[in-house]
Length: 286
Image (cartoon, rainbow, N blue to C red; front, top):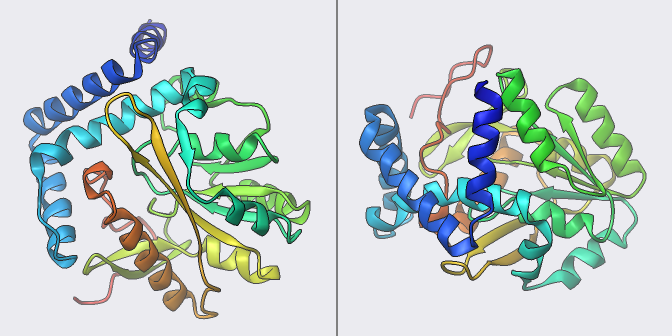
């Protein structure tokens, strides 16, 4: 009974006008912040330390609802892809076309910022995109998310060896693949690298895949323009990663820091980016 009820609730939120849905998401952000001491402590520590390291001013009253809007934006984009695409403004699409025209495929990196779910749909309108994702622990929730996320020309693969192999095949066909670069990988699949002044266990997959044939790596952001106004999509081609895994991870995190600092109040600060995954070596001493 739980799955149909939650599915119905999600559909109600997604059916609202975008401005109303974002307002509701902002309200949920405040509810989570006030109701959960664990959420609040994690949010405050990540947000304050990151902005202090970047010499930016903390604006809690904007950042707290901004995290909640990540959920409402995603739901609305999944449910209204055509309307969402019409509200997405891409600032430098020619960069993406030039990269894909090289014929080696494209590695698309999308951090959890603003309306990030619109980015793979933009690409899928032009060429096939294979997206790496971590399945939810609850089977019923995973089925709900998979059904909502489905979109033509987009293929989702899990974060395991089978999924990585499918991504390699997609690149060999000259297609795009998508990776969430700020998601903590499983133990043994990453290295410790600085991120906003602290060590974070960071994926090495983008650098490993790019190094095979110097495949273009493009970092995207989808900054929210305002209530109901859509998103500004920015694409930045990253320089070639270092051959050293730890240095490459540090380069990736530095690029993420720069793009997050453009809209820090729209980032997912309550995510435990600095956790120690099971099986990973201990982080270096600070």
